[in-house]
Amino acid sequence: MFKVVFAVFAGWPTHFARQLSTRRHLAPVCAVSAPPAPAVRAPATTGSVKKAQTLTEKILARHSNNASVAPGQNIWTNVDKLMTHDVCGPGTFGIFQREFGENAQVWDPEKVVIIPDHYIFTSDPRANRNVDILRDMVKQYGIKYFYDITDRSDFKANPDYKGVCHIALAQEGHCKPGEVLFGTDSHTCNAGAFGQFATGVGNTDAGFILGTGKLLIKVPPTMRFVLEGEMPSHLLAKDLILQIIGEITVAGGTYKAMEFTGPVVDAMTMEDRMTICNMVVEAGGKNGTCPPDQTTFDYVRERTSELFEPVYADDSASYVQDYRFDVSKLQPLVAAPHSPDNRKNAADCRDVKIDRVYIGSCTGGKTEDFQAAARLLHRAGGRVVVPTFLVPATQKVWADMYGQPLPDCGGLTAAQVFEAAGCVAPAAPSCAACLGGPKDTFARMNEPQVCVSTTNRNFPGRMGHKDGQVYLASPYTAAASALAGRVADPRDYGA
Image (cartoon, rainbow, N blue to C red):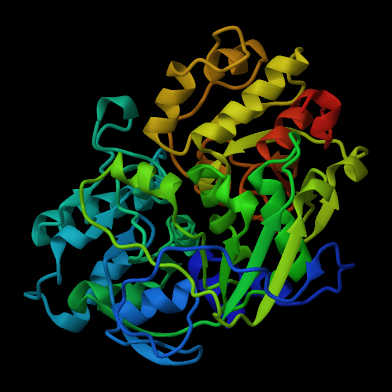
């Protein structure tokens, strides 16, 4: 199942997916323990409950009109939102039309969100045709939420365009606690940060949802990850998820819900939580969740007036595995080529010379990611010694880079710090080189180079050239590496 899911969602060759399914035995660096002491939570409001449930189980029970559900149970799930983009959207609508008929109507045009973001700033005619097809479908079916890219010469001229789908979904108020979100992209799990069930589906499933608003799914078992201890100043959320994936391997979470909890999660910003949940699919996870709290509610209420009803895991819920991490003992990490679970300490890779640095993507291209990188560059001083590419995830992130002064940086914005450090000027928001794309894609690796990147995947060919080598890292580690011209420990540069 793991191989099929990845091959379909990311378009990887089958031998890449097969490589991922191979478990590697890693030395344990965390405690796998009995469940922690339960946190005090508000009571759930899903009606009578036959058994204690995890957060994922409780959401799925509500959306299948059941008092409770159990792992392995097949249920018809009512969908709150469906998202698709320029790569999968045309195929999704094509399947919908074929199976439901040319005169069929979308089940709810206000619950479908279409966000072109993958192959948009390119001269490739096939990529541009995909966006044209989406425009036709939006007009035909009256889709309310379409964030079009209408002026490729100046993205800022179009207020409708947003950027990378997963961050735009959150910023536009489409992610809400307790809801069910499906998307035709494997990193749809990003939205689990809001305490909702969010996962990627293929075009066929999405086409069925377009016609019915439902999907038959199997309830996943849940793994729990308790993050505790004091977060060191040199670590970011990206280090934590690389630690977890390195611990359980890329197959360790296969078709499981991954529930993140504990005081470290409670203290995280929403962007930090998105970083964690975004990469559960790199461990094979079906979805990831963080318990919703006041931080969640404040973020959501600033972006939508729609009502939502959060749910929480029951104190006595059953988990297939419990992991406990003391984050105070962790070091800055990288995932070395060619797998997200090829975990190494950044300090142990100092001999690796690099050709470029890339800061961007749904995982590592948010406002706080760029602010972290800029703070390190400002503290360290000097200029980058390799090309350093910056791709903000959304227009909002782009505006923040240019408009928000950074604390302790003399009133400079992130964009000003990057310019002073000699980075390449920020590109228009999009997925860009995260997944390669057409050869004219900004920052695509068209040569067999070595790159430190804040993205989420590092398989052969992922960022372009089949012989390229990608080290996944936090924004701190990426910025430090840009200054060093090699993989660097950010502690050596003031982190």
